[in-house]
Length: 105
Image 1 (spheres, rainbow, N blue to C red):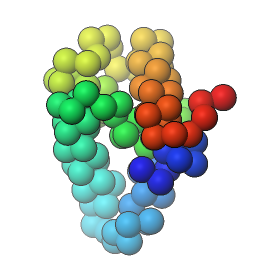
Image 2 (tube, rainbow, N blue to C red):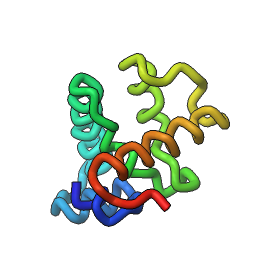
Image 3 (cartoon, helix red, strand yellow):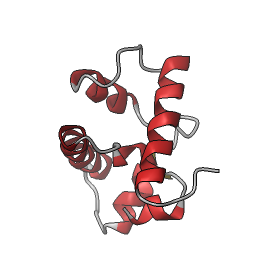
Image 4 (cartoon, rainbow, N blue to C red):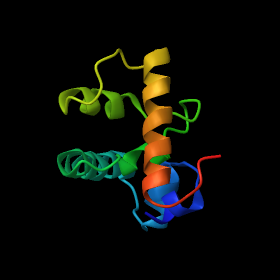
């Protein structure tokens, strides 16, 4: 939640480092935990906090697993990687920032 109050996304790797995780499989473990958080956020009707975490290889976008999980949860119906995915992420990021008190502009 601290990242939301700062108003900008960060990478999965930076989150792993902040949490003090060490290899092996640090990014995999982070993604598993974030998917559980994603389930909880959707079930509670909250914006998905996971929108604040992006892949270092993905043009400031979450990894494909974010979109696949969102499809499984019924909150995203487009193809991961397309323009609809970018719009979905941008909207979810703005919702998360607004919900947790950071300005979106």
